[in-house]
Image 1 (cartoon, rainbow, N blue to C red):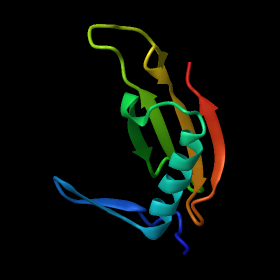
Image 2: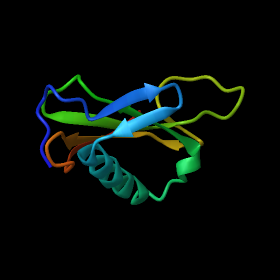
Image 3: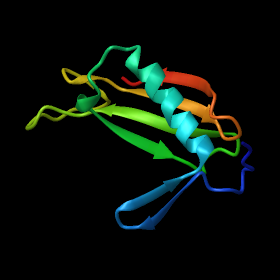
Length: 101
């Protein structure tokens, strides 16, 4: 499994179809495994994947949803605390983690 910085790890084929490379699948699985150690309910989060900003890594953010009708800054609230993981484009190994405010 190897991907160069020029290769996309996922592609939107159609409006409702996402195609992922094996490395993207491994990286997302590793990020989800790390997220589960926080013991926060996944249903309280939106998962956002960013590819292309970094030649070496892909970013996966678990962003806490808000209670309907509430406003605020950041991704830490009564629904949970957001966290972002970075994983290597060539192996899917998680190489970084940061908590949201």
